[in-house]
Image 1 (tube, rainbow, N blue to C red):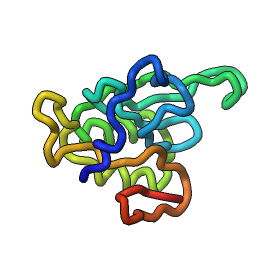
Image 2 (cartoon, rainbow, N blue to C red):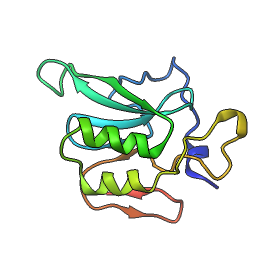
Image 3 (cartoon, one colour):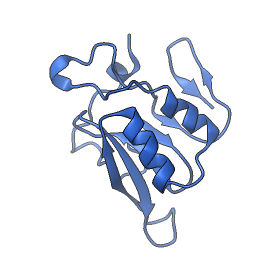
Image 4 (cartoon, rainbow, N blue to C red):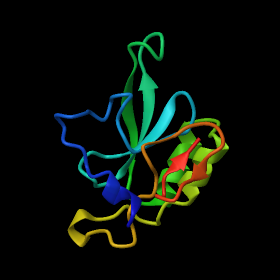
Length: 130
C-alpha cells in the first residue's frame, strides 16, 4: 500500500492549504514547507507569512511543481537552510507527481502528515516519526 492512499486529497471544507494543520507536509524550516495540493495535482512550496509568526500567520504558495527536480530546485533557491531530514524526504520523492487520471501507480507521494526537524524513523506502516 502506498502512503498517499492513506492521505487522499482534502476537501476544501475540511482544511485549507494555508492552514498550519494542513496534512501531508514537509517542513523545510520555520518559514517554509511543501504540501500536496488539495486536488492531488502537484507539490506546492509554501512560505509562512504574517505578523508575529507563528500566531496569526498563514501559509502562501510560492512555487507549484510536478517534478521533484523542479521542487528541489525551488526549495534551494527560495527557502534558505533546509533541515537534513526534510532534504532526505525531498530526495526520496518520485520523479513526477502522480496524475490523478493515471491512478499514479508507483508514482505516489511518499511523505506522511508532517516531517519536521529532528531524527525520523520509518515504522511498519510506512510512516515517519520524529
